[in-house]
Image (cartoon, rainbow over all chains, first blue to last red; front, side, top):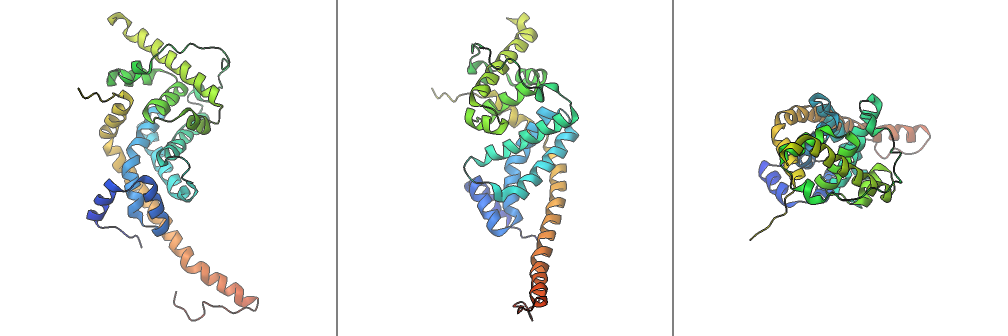
Length: 199
Length: 71
């Protein structure tokens, strides 16, 4: 039988309890209410990332469902070494990348960069991306290759460190730095092509 | 002057969450269905697995400590 916490307790918990504490509470009690709180916190973010990468609402819905079940079934494997959000997002990104690879929907996510060792100047300031008008940001992110979009979302939306991204994508830290630089260059180039007449 | 650093990536994330809340309701229904199945399976395993172990123990000549207990 599924146990449910009272709505009052649940709303109280949702404000005060950290993700890591909710995981612990769920593992100890198997009470679905704790999982529901985690669902409430993260399902929208997981859906948003899946939609950004898969570009289909129905596929993003299926992905969110599968990812939430993966999280539920693997909760005991969460070691607490990273933030819970980083763990969840790593499952999300890897799921979407695998999905695109299997479907071969986007070559940019399954072809490794051949210019990894070239020196790319980092002349695009973070401020340029972070302070951009949101509707323009959305348009540019839709236009750049999925591989570049993924790494920009990890860095700027999820605020992951280089080390965290390198673990998730299974690449060296220097390769990740290079990929971020290239993604920023691509972003700015696309922006200039789209909006240059206005500047 | 209070200056909170802007992050348009976070703003975009928030807007998407609001825009697609109906999609999330669909997903929630499906996840709830899966969740019920998983917990039912876990309950079945929890209840019957110890019984099964008890039978094996009895078969090899040991004493079943579960004997006489209700399921």
